[in-house]
Each structure stands twice: as structure tokens, then as C-alpha cells.
Image 1 (tube, rainbow, N blue to C red):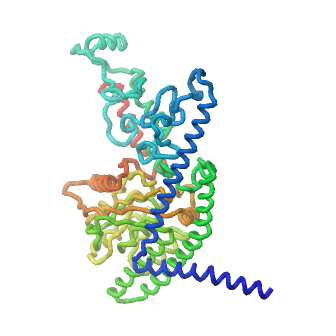
Image 2: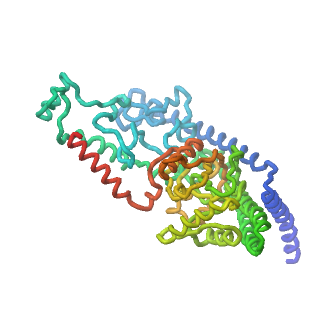
Image 3: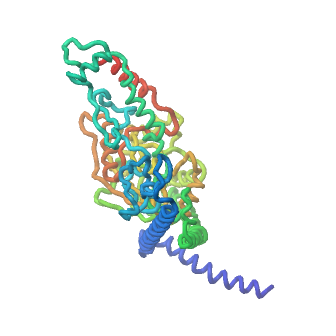
Length: 531
């Protein structure tokens, strides 16, 4: 028995000593903002493994297709909805027509959509339908659908549909309506026609299949499988090579990376609580501000390293300075940690409990942060007052704010709330774009709790992102807060390669505004009246 205990102690020393040595080395390098380059080599290796997996999946798919075509009789006629002997079926051929972007895999060697480089998918990879024009049922002012609309013909090409002109078309319109306008130009008279509803029916069907809002709160689709089982395709069992690689990756993620990451995160949180408590007891503002900057950056660098974060900052000459607002698109609570590794901010946001609540209370002890209850109207007045007081003091750090008010899946930027753009002061736009190949950073708060989300982050390969600092922006004379917010949003969307949407992100929690419905009803009534 004593011999077994001695062997166990020796084995624990052999395994645990290097483990803790690596952990504390990572913590130390993170605290000073340095790196040996191991994470970047690790990410490069993952890309090569993913590419090998893509090629393996493609080869298996092509072999499966070849076996199917060889087993079918050559004279068998092709029928709608049944299997076909040409390669169009494996690439999405329907009713004899190959969709846009799909090619014959057997004749051209094109990479298949399931395992290879698929054609570009609109809207960040979440669209399943292709719209000919902007959604008609939107809060924006739209063109008259009678004068400009599109409809697909048999070859899949969209053609413009115009009102009937004089001549034979005009006569046809006269027989349908029973009257012609006073000028005799053959224009359609006012009155109800069934065709007036077609554009609204089309838009309604598109919204039922997939609307512009719901798809922004789903995980972004990937072109290549990243060896994670967060998919229903079950690629891990498609070949023995991928099965072996997936099993090795599973063991590394759950039994090597995850314990190490949890320990690093725990050290970062403990450092945060103790460090900010000490800083909060310093009475003098100068030393307190300096120590707060150090503890602030150290804390979030450790938290970022705990998820193997690889962050690339661009245009650092535009880094936010004192006071003002740093405005960024919002994908995850990790956005705060990502940005705070390079700059100190004052934070504003909804008051949380649990893990986030611990961090919020610790941060508030040492520096001015604004936490509020979203449901309480009286807090909004308090927040506006605090914002004006904060930006009026030039020695205060910039306020980091996410005007969308909710997390979006990093494929688009949705409506910015105008509150922070009404206060005044300088706006520092920042665009954040995550690479979903290594791990999906999007937090679907309606599906996962914070602890479940952190578990997914700890078991992902890595979190890789690019951050662009953009030139500071000011509100122009005569410009409304809404126009200013939209101008800032468009700049962020363009730099990050994101889709610029007019919709309010809070639509995932509430019904559309009544005035939006009334605007569409008013427009349709004018259409029926011929106005």
C-alpha cells in the first residue's frame, strides 16, 4: 500500500508540476501582455487540420456518389424528386435546374458544400433563400411595388415588372379594370387588383421561410467542419481518419485545455476581486488611476488567455483616448475582455447576477462604471445624467458601449440605440469580427445560460478575432441623434464586413412596433387608392 502511494505521488509530481508551470507561465505572460507565439502556431496548425478534414470529407462524398451512380441503371429516366445519375443531385440540383453557385462535382471537381468551399452565402452564411430586392415589410421607406418589383421566370433570372403601357398592353389593362384615366395614356385606374397583393404575399412567404431578424440570433454556418460536434452532420464518423482525429481532439480539449483554461480563468477572477478591492482603498486619484489601469488590463488579459484568445488590433493610432464613447458591435460578453486587453474603459450595461455580477461589483470598487436595471424607467434618467457627467470630465476613461443592446451572431450590425449619441462628445467606432472556424463566440442568451456559454468557450479550439479602431467621429451640425447613430453603424459594418440592418435587435424579445405595422397599412391603402 505504501508503495502504491509512493508511485502515485511520483506520478502526480511528474504530471502536475509541468501543468502548473505552464499555467503560471501563461498567467505571467498574459499579465505583461506578451506572448511566445505558441497560440498563433497553434491556430495555424488547426487550419491545416481543418483543411485535411475538408479534403477527407470531399473524397468520401465523391466516392459515395460514384458508388451510387454505378449501382443505378443507365436507361432509368430522371423524374422530379428522385435520384439522378448526374452530379447535380449531390450539389443541390432540383427539378433539373442547378441553383446559382452550384457546379457539377463529377465533371468539374468542385468542392462540395457539405465538406468543401461552398459558394458565397449571403447575409453571413445564414440565408436559405435569395431575395431579389430588400424586404418590403421593413421600417424603411420603400418604392412603390407597382412601379418596380421583380419576379423570377423559369430560368431563375429576375426580370423587372412594369405597369401596362399604351397599345395592346393598355387595352388588356382596360378590359381588366373597366376604365381608363382621363388623359388616355392607358395607365391603370385606382381600385383593387389581386396583383397588388403579390409583393406583400411574396415578402410574407420569405419572412416565414427566413426573416432578416431571426437568422441573426443563430450560429453562423461554416464552410468547413472544425472537428466540433456542435453540428448535426456527424462528420466525425464519416471515415476512420476523421474519427481518430476527432477523438484525439476531444481528449485534448476536454482533458488538457479545459482544466488549464478553467484554472487560468479562476486566477484571473481572484486577481480581479482582490486587485480592485485594494485599488478601491487608495484615496489619492493619481496612483489609484494608474493602479486601476494595470489591474484592469491584467484581469482581462488573463480572462482572454483562458479561452486561448488570439486578438489582432488594427489602426492603433485611433485607439480611444480619455472621455468620449467607444462604440462597437456586440457579439458576446467576451467583447469587453477582448477590447480591454489593449485599453482601459469605463463600462455601462445591465446589472447581472452570478459570474458577471461578481465581475461587475469588483470593477465598480475602483473606477466609475454605470450599471442599471433595464426594466426600470427611472434608471434611464439616472444613466443619461451619469453619461453627461462622465464625458464632461476629460480625465475619465472612455465609456465602452454596445448600442445594439443585445448580442448578434457577428454576421450583421443591427439598429443602434440613440441614447449615447444624444449626450454629445467624441465617438470612437470599433469593429470586431470573430473567426468562427475555431469556436463560435456568439452568445445565444435565450438558449444558453452564462455558465453553459462559458463551458462552450472553454471547450472550443480558440477564440480568434480582428479589432479595427476607426477614426473618431463627431455629430454634425443639424444632424439628429438617429442619423448620427446610423452613420456610425454603417462605418462599423463596412469595416467589419458585416451586413448593415435597420431592424432593432430587441425583436428577439418583443413584438414589432405598432407604428411599423401602421406604416405598411398606410402604404398599402395608398396603393389601392392609386396615390
